[in-house]
Each structure stands twice: as C-alpha cells, then as structure tokens.
Amino acid sequence: MKRAIEKCWRDSASLIVLAKRNMDGLSSGNTGDSNYDILLQTRTLDASFSNGVVFPGGVKEEADASERWLHLLGSFGFDQSDFETLHRVGSPITPIFADNPIKRHIALRITAIRETFEELGLLICSSKHKTSKIDYWANFISDIDLKYWQKRVSENPSELFNLCKEYNCYPDIWNLHYWSNWLSPVLLPKRFDTAFFICALENKPTHIKANSEVHKVEWASPQDTLERNKRGEVELYPPQSYELNRLSFFKDIEKLNNFARERSSYGDELFYPVRVRAKDGIVFLLPGDHLYPSDVDLNSTTVRKEDKTIISLRETGQTLHRFETDFKKSVIVRQNYVPKNHINMGDQVIPAIIKTHKQN
Image (tube, rainbow, N blue to C red; front, side, top):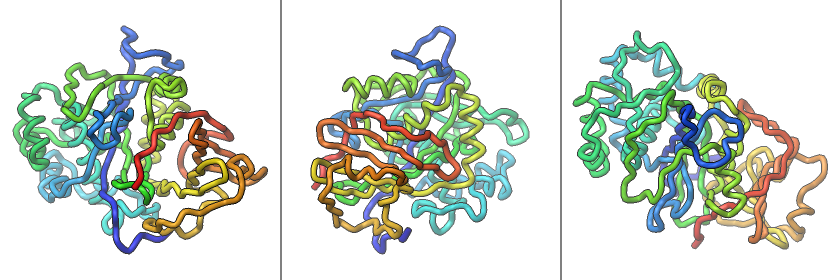
C-alpha cells in the first residue's frame, strides 16, 4: 500500500475504555453474558462525528510528542527497553506510525489519554513506579481538581504535562494496547487517520464529567449497543460498528485485555474503506476483500463503478470483507476473511444501521 504524496488528513487517537461490571448490575440493557461494559459518548450536533455514539478521542497535538514525556516516564523507572515493547521490529507500519514507530506509539497513546480527560474527565494515569506495577489493569487518577484541570487541558494540550507534574503521575501508556487503525474515505470534508487503543479498568470510575462536545455518556456492553443500533435507537459510524462487533466475541474482560496486550506490539493493517458504486447502492471494501486494490492511492477521488447489484458482487467462494448499503439498510459482510493477528469472526452478514459523514 502506498502512502499519499500529500497527507490530507489529521492524525488522531481514540480510546476504547472497558470496565469490569460491578455486582450492582448498573449497565444499560442486554449485557449479552459479558462481564464488562464500554465507555461510550454521544457527540453534540455541532461536534465532529455529530450525534453518533463513539469512543472518546481526538486529534493529536504537538504537545503529545514532547520530549518532556520521555523524561517524566524515565523518572518513574521506565527506559528505552520499555519503550521498545510498544512496537515489535518487523511489524507492519501504517502511515500514522511512519518515521519513528516507537515515538509515534508513545505520542498517540498520550493523545488518547489527553482527549479522554478533556471530553470525559477520566484521567488514565498512574503514580506507581515501574517496579510496583504488578497487574494489567489500567490506572486512573480521580483525586484532582477536575473542573479546573479539564478546562486548562482543553484550552492548552501542553497542560496535561503540568497536571502530571502537579499530581506526581504519568500517562499509563503501557496499559493502553494498540487495537486498530482506520483512515476516513477521501470524499469526506474532514478526514482522520485514527489509531484505536484499548484499556481495561478493574472498577468503573464514578467521576465522569462530560465537556460541551458531549451530549450523553453511558456504560454499555457491546451486545446491547449493537442491538440498540439494529433497532435504530443509536447511530454508529463504520469503525465503531465494526469494532463493537469485534469486541462482542469476548465475554470476559480479562481474556479480552490479555488478548489485546499480547497482540498490541505486532501492528495491524490500515483499514481504509474503498468505495464501489453498484447499481443499487454502495459497497465499501476493506483490506482482504478479493476486490480490494493491491495498491491504494489514499487521496484518489476516483470511485469505481460496477454494473452489478450489491448482492451479485458477492461472488461465491471469494474472500469478502466489506460494508454494504442500499441507503435503506446496511450490513457488514465477511466471508473467508482471516485477519492477520486479530479476532477471526468467521463468515457473517451482520445487519447494521451505519451513520456516514456528509460528503462534499
């Protein structure tokens, strides 16, 4: 896959926050026999990803890549060998991690942590020295002046560093595990190349405080969110719909967290949907589909056209990995698709109500 000569998108990071379900059963709807919930937010109409249910996250800022973070992490006992665990040599490198994968992994994890704090007041940070970290649950700091620091960090991303210095803590980047990478299609007015990370909390925080871009915050299981989406009660963008389906294959939070941790440093392919116009709708091809081009121009506005229906484009025996929509209903189709170093969800045609961005 080639990288576009001129990058026409913004790098960003999103955090999938899992929390072990409390025994009091406080969770919306059907839990699907899983023992965890995911932190979800619905954006306001004038925010990016408007009115859609999404994971917290946002655009990478220069402050997220400051060398000061390496010194801060070093003061808690972490060194180059710990940084190198974030990316295994020889693993796939997508454009968002190009040039210096290790530093990019550090910076994008800090982006995900910062944006989660800005939007929801949840600070995924730790005050534990490296020698004291004995488990794989992500840590969060709650005993802070939340309103004051949330405002400061939202106005100036570099204030996250000052917050960490003030409370003697650091971004808990080693308990954020790289999960996937999605790039917005070229025809959208705003494009984002987003690294998705996942972390697991042993207990649900009780101090969530949404900012002005967030209309609603909730904890819900993947199964319940997908069922509500099918009923038209919530709207999901393609990456969120796909990832919630993928997460739903794990019922146990510790098994999911261990899987995410073990695969994190091996990298992943870029999920860039390639648009095909059929006679009765649109097909968005994903990597691995037999029609997916071998050499993708990430900035090309050319739309492939096929004189076939959506169904007739599903060739028997071929590998299918795609979204399909006839503008009335949408489905995720997988057939003979075996992902590299990720969850194999088998052959499925999954109904979904997929929210798309307005296009130019």
